Length: 246
Length: 246
DNA sequence: GAGTGGTCTAGACCACTGC
DNA sequence: CAGTGGTCTAGACCACTCG
Image (cartoon, rainbow over all chains, first blue to last red; front, side, top):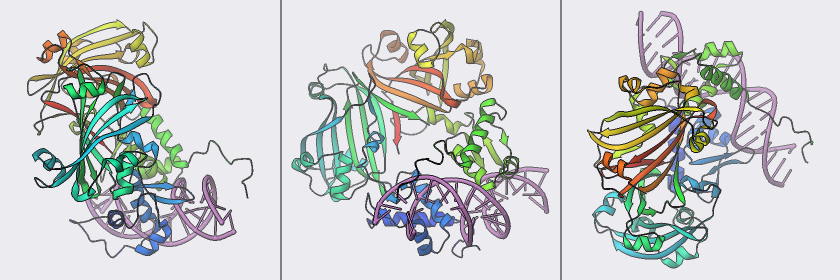
């Protein structure tokens, strides 16, 4: 039996996509928080008055977009950055020698500022809107490899302090998720090769002017809203940026 | 109550995956060539004695892996590199200024050699096996941006000449596909920042020692067989390597 | 209009998890 | 054991393409 709410083209949207956007609303509103179970497929089917297969297809898409995680026998969960396997999704740095290393994030500074023209454009906020800036060092096996500057809109993150950052154990995105309810779902990175300036060179223990990998990232939360801009300099002496082209 | 110690099937594979590997066989054997239509879902369902939904699920997975392309009303086609939209899948270089540019591949040299230790390891072939080496320049809007050295196993590509490369209009992967029946389905890239050596600096018109983006790539065809290794140096003065993290 | 993929349904059974 | 997601089926109808 066809479903009544399916209208013919040109604004045609299949039923499972309508269900999908209903589910997305729940995620955006925070009704279902990261790590939590969502209702079972059969319950959602009853609630939305569609067949289980239609709910299933909606969830399938969201699972393939890393928004939900299915676990057979247990249920479907809202994706979270707590999972250490998800770490490599956003930090594509691997040792040249092979193997696995533990990354250590060392916050150096954290202050409040007003958005300059570049930050405002990247974060889609107004000039002089309040932002938080974090300077950070990333080390592998105790050796500094990345120095980062991270720009976070004050509207979303409120006031951030160095203490908060230093107290938290785990990844930055996991921190954002649990402390501010901000979940990063995708990011765009732009890579270039640049000469090391003096301060970066000192921190990464490389010669001034030697080549570094510049990585600029804009991260987005639901509805493609940009909520983080960061510029990092990567020392690629012992590590490389690994990318898989599918 | 614990389950009986005899697990039902450690090698359990759902029906649609078995169908999928049957379809993969057709692709690997070259029975269905890039760009061609494959039989319709209903015909495959009859042929394999399963329901259409099961065939559909197998094809769904292969479409999401860029092996097949569905076109409503027309049929399902073997994916090809001819499609210019697929170009950016493997060359993630965009102008800093924004906009779109036409890339131009300029083959410089092409010779036959024996695999050294590094090439042999990357291509999973034996030391001293015959390989083809191509040196190439990539230009955007007439300006040189990338200089490449490409290593291709002789077993797969036979003998390659500069004439063949220069005669072909289109991307390199499109060339490999049509001339040698080799279809690249995925690749791994490793990026570093390195100082420009003299010859590269001259070709890219940058100062010797200035930072360049080093991109090493291994490309794989069906069954994860490596069939290309390339080392490129990218000038990131006017362009950057763009990557989307999902 | 005939043939293709795309959506939706209803129901059956399997595999896994935890009580 | 009940409840979850995972697979498979059969059939209906929709949307698109092409002759």
